[in-house]
Image (tube, rainbow, N blue to C red; front, side):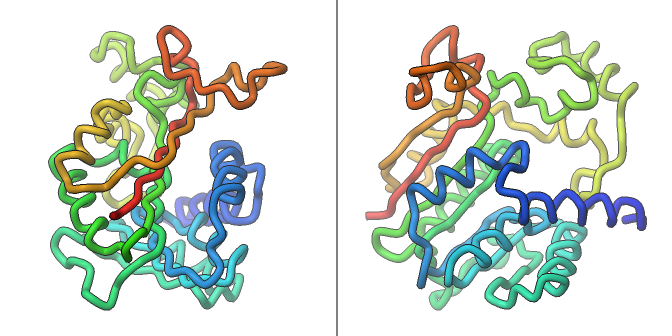
Length: 259
């Protein structure tokens, strides 16, 4: 990781932490505040990335937060911000929970997967949900926000190629576009936009539900989506989970419960 990449990562994660209107997280933060009281809880931020949301949980509630990620560059930046802002009720660790599973004393009230599930191959994701379910206390919950594959921004490269829904272009043409506008990113596991795009699993609600069902006995207790049409008068709380409006959904939110 270069010094420029480090500074870029710090600025990005810092904004996610401190800015409640951060572009891709403001809906998430409002929803989390309306749904959950995290005071006194043990929180696992799985796939915590550079730690922005982990630090946000730890600073907004009197809780204990564990941020896990498999990318050492992400964890390095997360720990830098933890020290910078003196947030001592959060612990960051580089860890693969399929190889180093949660111990009996590591039990959590809430697990958050913020924009994580779409990056993980389905067989691996199934195994992860099994481990996470085992790591929940009775009645514990898993919150899964993700951009569904039909979303205008699901490709994770819209900002570079300037074309919403670009994932539906012929793949050879799209990859040339990405390569033309490619840039290095902070991650060790995915270090540029081509790798980031090719690492996506084309996640949909139906496919996610099948994965969760195969993984164990987690129950869906809440589902919501955010659609571009929700900005219109009288449509704020409507779930547009049906064709053709599902192509306008920017984020899905799924809450799972153990027991």
